[in-house]
Amino acid sequence: AQKITQTQPGMFVQEKEAVTLDCTYDTSDPSYGLFWYKQPSSGEMIFLIYQGSYDQQNATEGRYSLNFQKARKSANLVISASQLGDSAMYFCAMRVFADNYGQNFVFGPGTRLSVLP
Amino acid sequence: DGGITQSPKYLFRKEGQNVTLSCEQNLNHDAMYWYRQDPGQGLRLIYYSQIVNDFQKGDIAEGYSVSREKKESFPLTVTSAQKNPTAFYLCASSIPGVGTEAFFGQGTRLTVV
Image 1 (cartoon, one colour):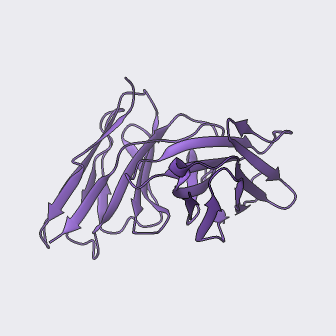
Image 2: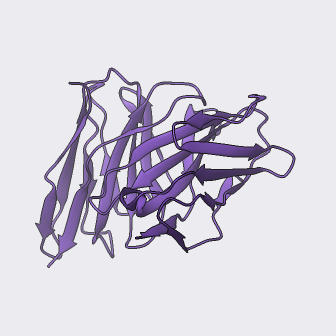
């Protein structure tokens, strides 16, 4: 069964420092996509970054980078130079084929990040 | 602007009533999804649809129903059979392919009074 694990319920980081949010995944499908979303207190889901299972290089988007270790089935999100506006819930998600009916998204439980001034 | 619109933003329901949450997208996406989020928790899949007039149950479909009569619309009905419906509901859409992200609406917060 496909599953996403995020073992850090909450994290604190000092403003301007870097922080790593952990994500491990489980799937037997060789083709999958890994995503990170940010959810501020308003509730909207903001897409941050994507990594494909066949991608050789780690994905980067501005201050966000994804540390992809395929053998360990981990896809950690690294946020560099944290800002106060980064305080939010962060969800790791995986997209895989779902029982011959298209593709589905599986989400982890999330990590609440608090950036301290 | 293209996007997903959920309405209403806040919804109050009396026990025993059915309510319908609206989700409309103008992104021309084939796939649409409904998720439930409880406080401090992740997203759990209720129903999803890959094409018009077809949909599949997700992990927590009991007490919910959906329809997909138009590509743009995927309404969710929370029936009186749903034991604990108070939650935040998110609708999403996407195009096919494991490499494409889901686009989300702003969510509907349902409270049973």
